[in-house]
Length: 102
Image (cartoon, rainbow, N blue to C red; front, side, top):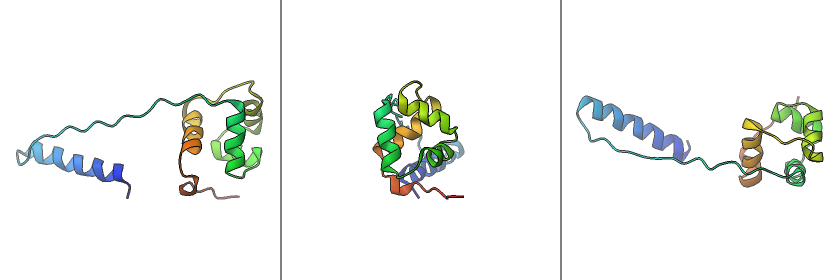
């Protein structure tokens, strides 16, 4: 499992122990960085990096092909979860993400 999952599982066990009176309470804080707004050039570069057509990329992102086209033209910008996923793709190891072609 991931380090974050292991930390969360351990924290839950510590909370249970504390509630039962068998252990001390500990505090852990996780920070989620704000998402950087990506330029239209960066979005196209991300799509090319993962080796997808606009249609396939749109399917993966859960948006229409027209939306991906608009992002890459710069006429609109991704928001919410799409923006977060693009940020993850731009900074993370894309080999850990799986896409099943239909």
